[in-house]
Length: 359
Image 1 (tube, rainbow, N blue to C red):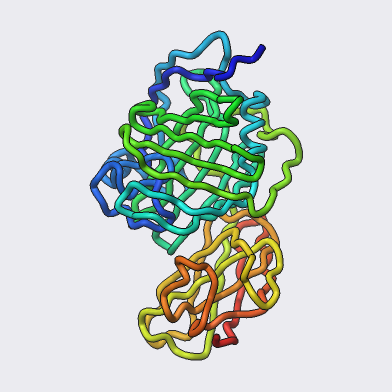
Image 2 (cartoon, rainbow, N blue to C red):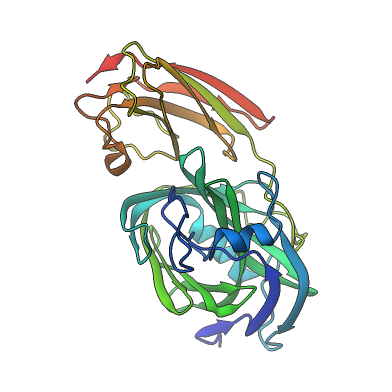
């Protein structure tokens, strides 16, 4: 009979970049190791830079490790049932509020579109602006000769890369939860648990240094069908492997009425048509930039985006409330109905959107 808690790892020590979970778009300026973090635990920009962060989608970690594995239960590996169950559970477009114990405070929504970025990696990314992002990646990697399921969390904050790897420690079959702890520092440093109380409900609870960090309650807004058991590849990744190569999308947005100097320009991408109103639609990705005074155009580049056909809505947010609503309202200028945008898997895609309606 399968034990209630399937212990996958008791302790792992690997030199890795520390990371933290923050509001998607927090500037990460706090020196408090429990503030301004990602959903896994990045302590500070000093720690990230001293670890040698470089390159736009690369992850850096040392493979020097010592491990005490449970020989009775084994570790997660490609094809392992616990890995496949988690990948099936996490796949989807998730949205929901975040309660934060950091200086970033609470925020009303975090959208994560988790789906395969390649045959080995489940990936999701959320951007608030061009300098601040949050990334989730899940894959099997080899650490100290053992294959383990790794939850990788990071992003760019004020130009500094945060990137931390955590390892699957145990799986509670009754609670349908997976607990990940930092490869460097263990559960005493980062303790993150994903749970799925229902098939379309997700909770993420994170502690950093033994203190409450964030809690995210997500609802699966859209399913993401897998082609079979994931990962598709039986080859585990390297302990210091980069993020998968993914396409980018550069969108040029134009409008008639010049900006006042405080306006922000948004592009939101949905995987389903929204028609003439975005109410009820869930963006799979969104990005904003601040337009200078007098501007009538802006260019926005989304990196690490899943190849797909999207339906884009561009908004000139003239009253500054779109970060909390993700729905344009009176005073804003919008491009309705939505514009079809194709992101192919060959590298760099482009699109042009005209904002033609003033609300």
